[in-house]
Image (cartoon, rainbow, N blue to C red; front, side, top):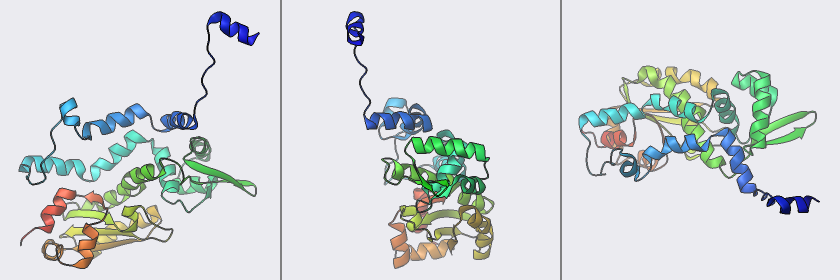
Length: 278
C-alpha cells in the first residue's frame, strides 16, 4: 500500500544522508556556515576583486604610515574578542576552549562547570550538543559521564587552532598584556603551543620586544597562568637587543622560522623590528 501511495502521488523515497552530510548539518548548528563564510570571505585570496576590497600589499613594498597604523590597530589584541564572539557564544567558547585545548583530559560535567564558571544546567545541555555534533567524545566511567576532545574529528585541528588564537589563550594573554601595550611593540606565543603540539605539562612560551622590563611582564602575565592552567614563560628583549640578535642568534632564528600566535603587533612589525637599526 505504501508503494502504491508513493506511485500514485509521484513521490520518490527521500535519499538517506551520508555520514559527512549528517556531520555538516550538525556542525551548522554549532557554527552557522553562512556566518563563517561571511567573516572569512573578505580576507580570502582574490576577494578584493570580487568584493571591492583592497588589493594585498606586495611583499617588497612598505605601506604608507597611515595604512600601517590602521593594520596594526586591526591586528592588535582588540581583534580577538570580536572574532571569537562572531564564531561562538561565550559559553560555547569556554567549553570548547577548555576541552579542545586540553585533549589529554577527560572531565565530568561538574568539573567543566567549575572550571568555566558556568551553571551546571547550561554545561549539561552544551556538552550533550557538542558530543552529538562529534566535537567531543562522551564515555561512561563508573556512575559519571566524562567528556574529552574528539581528536579524530575532521575539523578538530582547525577548530583547536581558532580557539588557540582567540578564546583559548590569545584573548587571555592579549588582555593581560594590554596595560603594557604602549611599552611592548611586539608579543607572540611560540613553541609547542603555537605549533599545536603541546602536552599536558607544556609551558606557554611568549616572546616580547619593547621597553617593558622583565618584572613588569611577569607581573602582568601572572594572573593569566591561573586562568589558562599553564605556566607562562616570557622572554623579553629590548628593541636594540632584538634587532642585533634576530638574524644571528640560533635561538631567535629558530623561533622566527616557526609558527607564532601574535598578541601585540603582527608579521610586518616583526620584520621591521628584526631589521631595526639603533
